[in-house]
Image (cartoon, rainbow, N blue to C red; front, side):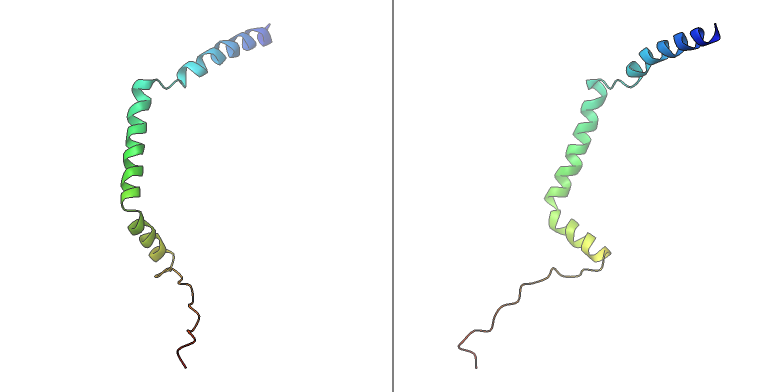
Length: 74
């Protein structure tokens, strides 16, 4: 008897969980607008962001490709 009542209770909770996790457009659109604004600022200052992250991890300059010596220089 207890098992049947418990299963019925869990079944009713199972119907409520998706409803509790529902995110409507009135909540979702401002969140996506804020994320788009953050992404836009990052893209506008991308070189500075990469330089800052590089300084944090110890890379002061990007590696430059070595140029071969020219044949006219002896």
